[in-house]
Image (tube, rainbow, N blue to C red; front, side):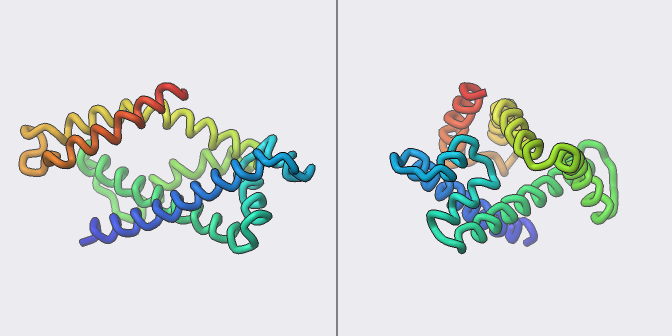
Length: 189
């Protein structure tokens, strides 16, 4: 029951974040490629980051768009936190055979994720946080194929998954979806 609600919540949060990302890319492309840019927008387009993207949205789409952008960032962060917490729980229980109370496990896994980022942000400020996001994205894009290929192989094995193996419909869809992701991740890294 909890997994079903988690799936619904994650799907909603990721859909909202996806739509906001599409709008940011569309607005940034439209504004930054215009010939008659004012000096402030030209400066924002030269060095576009999360802070300037919200102002760019606000200038083009109105005040509500920057608030929706903030909600999308919170939604994607919440989805990421829940996913990380569940992954940490399963790794600690299954592979490491560590049993902890949920609050301690949540505190430990969230601290491992938040404390290094918080230290970089406090010491380096907004520009260091932006660079940290870029570096983390580059590392994740490089690691993605190394996680997807074994995952698909493992979940397609009847000996390991038994009756829960990928179906004949899911298997080509997942391979078809993972191949472009793996190719683009390795070609852009």
